[in-house]
Length: 284
Ligand SMILES: [Zn+2]
Image 1 (cartoon, protein in one colour):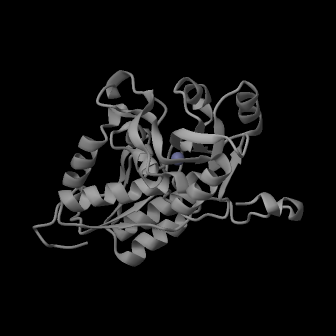
Image 2: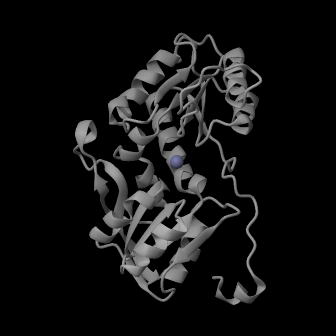
């Protein structure tokens, strides 16, 4: 916390974030906006994170952040207690006690333009971006929507693209796995930050050669491929959304005299990835 009057307070930063990511753009089920924090607290330092978990709260406190901007909601489902002996209650207590505000931009940041999937697409040098699923309702227009479809700067076979994506995205234990013919040539790529199961049909309709997202499951992926859909690349959920943190931090720096930091703490739950010895030769 600081008393420098040139610095914005939580109220001003939240208003600007709400302006860039209007809350009405979020899905009906989503919970976005200010989660906790004193509106009058001066903001000198912001920490951008994908997940507000004990480890990123430790980081926020260690760097002296006044505000955390998180992608995933801390409290998505209704709770009847935030007692400090509960997992989330302890986080709430720690943040309030330390005077750190918490703000969430989730599905409203997903559909924004630029939004979460633009940052992911930029990491992969995709050009000519369009929305994979154009937004309807309050967020409709101006290229907004879920996911992005674009052209790779250099077309490459699926297996090579998996290696390229692994090199461009933040490193995780899970890495990148691909489904489909490893030799299939990929020019048009659809991407979606976060879980992308629901948009497999849209990736097909968009004419993509491949679709990259997180959290793909056996049955939807198998059936999609059997129906002749685009090849698939499954990446770590955290890695698919982490690129957006750089973009939002840069925007915060340009909007206010604040120090905006980005957490590189991998909050993906997967910590080990082992490959069967007989499969090693197929790893790119
Ligand atoms: Zn996510």
